[in-house]
Image 1 (cartoon, rainbow, N blue to C red):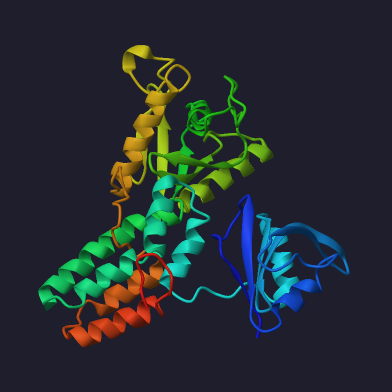
Image 2: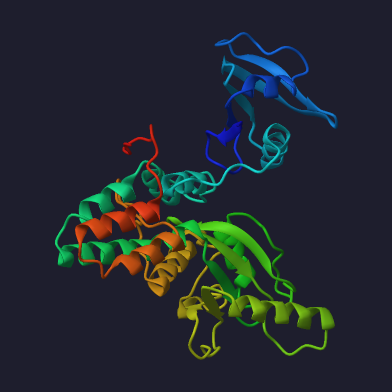
Length: 350
C-alpha cells in the first residue's frame, strides 16, 4: 500500500514536502515524471505530469524504492492535484492530536496561535495529561479545569472571532475600519450612506486574529440598495462574537449587547472619543482593550510549553473525563482522546 503524507504543515506556503512511501513508491512517482528520477540520495529537479499536462516542477529526492520525497510549490490546489495523482485520494486524516495541531499551525493567523499549536504538535498537552492522570482526584479535577480555561482562550486563537463595527451613518465606522486594517480598504467621506454593504478583513487585535466587519450605517432611507446593506449589517451583528457600536457626539448609547465607544472625536474634540485619522495607534489600543475585556481574554495567550486543548473535540473529551477517579481509567481516557503516540515527534515518545 502506498501512503502519501505532507511533512510540512497544511495550508498555503512557499514549499510543501510530500512523502510517498510504501512498496512501489518509486514506480508510482516515476509514472508522473517527464524523465527519469534522479539517483537515490541526490536531489534533482523534475517536471510532474499527467494526461492533463504539467502539474508542477518539483525537487525530487529518492530515498529508496519504497520512499520518495517531493518538494513542490505550496499552493493548496497544486498539492491537492498531486495527492490525487499519486494516491488517488485526499491526504490521510491526522492520526492523533499532535498531527491535528501541526495541521492547524500551518493555517494559524497569528504568532501566538502558531506557537501554541506547535507546542501541542510537540506533545505538550499529552505530557501534561500524562502527569495529571497520576495525581489524586482533587488535583486531577483542578488540573483539567485549568486546561479547560485554556481551551476557552485557544478557541479564540484558532477560530478568529467575528467583530462587527456598527452605528448610525457618519459615526466613523469605515474610518476606524481602515485604521484597524492598516490601509484604505473602504471609501470614506462626509456624505451619509457611503458604506452600503458588509466589508470583511482579517486583522490582528493584539495577539488575536479576528474577522473584522464594517457595516452600513443605520438611518431611515428609501434607497433599496442601502436598505439591503442595512439588512446585511443586522444579520452580521446577530452572528457576531462582539459588536462594537460607535456613538457619535450627542447620540445615545444603544440598549445592551454591544461595546459602545465614543466616536468622531474630530467633530467634538472637547468631548474626547476616538480619532482614527489623527491617532490610528491610539484608536487600535482602545478597540483592542475593549475586545479583550468583552471576551474575557488575556493579552498574552501563549505560555511556552503549556498543554492546551486546542479544539472542541479535546475540550469536550476532558469535560467527560472530569469525574474519573481511578488513575488507570484516566490514562485510558487520555490515550483514547489523543490517539496513538507519534514516533519521532519532539517531546513525544512511543
